[in-house]
Image (cartoon, rainbow, N blue to C red; front, side, top):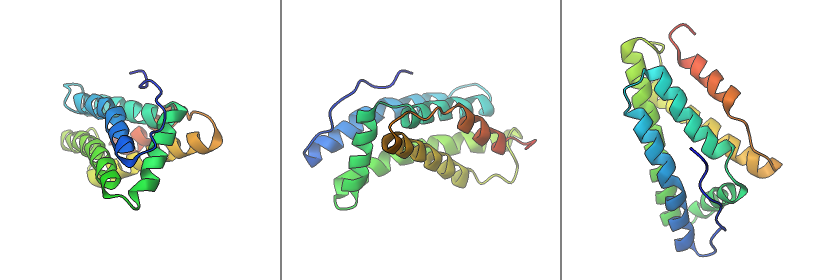
Length: 156
């Protein structure tokens, strides 16, 4: 899925919230489609992580700036907090659903805490976003996705 087109970071709080929602909606929808797919849990997890890490680690600078501005504003503005929390929770729940399916089928480790691992995956993706924004370049997600996937597999 190609990254959304670049957009300037809005100045007003309402515009920023709207921009975050517009930019994140296709990402959330794509991850949800993968989570509900018929492929094996490992294939679905890899696909979902590729979307999430692609959006966070290889996004355009405007998207990175938009999210960083949103996180900063979220400390003092409940609308930003709610918008970002909703987006993050949708991604976390989709990952958790895949992880639970993988644990139930035996594809993933039986002692896997699906909620905690989903949160770790999102935290790693957000770290890529921060690195991309502060170091001036995209973070290739391939190796990170492979490492996280290998940690979940039952043979790991």
